[in-house]
Length: 328
Image (cartoon, rainbow, N blue to C red; front, side, top):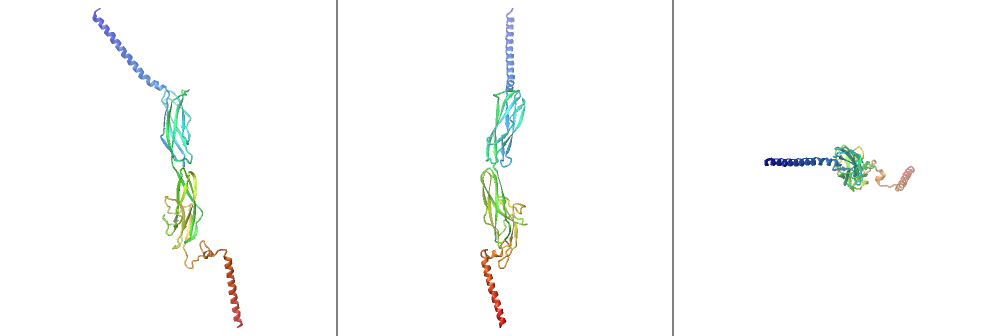
């Protein structure tokens, strides 16, 4: 055998070995690349996604609804348990659910506050944990968590109920009106109320001329929960009215738009009579003639007896005078 033949054989063997090594490396690299995602999918996993935040008005609905999505990116069916830590807020959520491989399930979590919950932010933690894989318990299953910030909104609802009163008054009289204020709030504070007069068919929200708000505004302390107080108002009426004044009295919160006409309820109707000219004594109105003269009930018998004696003496004088004329 020639030297050239030997060399050619050696070259072929080297080339074959190199090609074999390269192919083996390519096959191993391809297998390693393809095995990585398969092995990852074999492991159980859960992905939890929830709303970032929500608000609760504890004076109204008192409730917030949070939406979450539980995703299973694995190759096997998973049983996922849900746990909610909500502090002072009550919660209602699904205890567990089955999630198919490659699927996602949407759940809702209800959070509820007390009526007097103080305003502020409350963190809520939601955790999803895999407890079974294809029906086999998985005690150390993976989990995922989300934190949601719940904001308790500040609220205050107050209303004033006007008391009994009203009627007919004389010009210059003072009118007294009371009102009960009831509030529901989740924060301590203060609310102010004012009395307002509205003339019938006037169509104006301005305070009428000549009337005086003697007491001014009424301030009521507001506590947490249901609280309230009482307001008393005194109104001075003018004694120089050109004609009778008719309208109503209402109680409104300071800052509230003043009505320009009398409402159908929660009001007091009044009439202020023009003072009559003459002796200054009026038989109408709220006071009797005796009250206008300044006579008390204790003085009535004394004054009545004195008037009776005067009438007897006067009658006797007239009688004897007539008799004297008859004898002449």
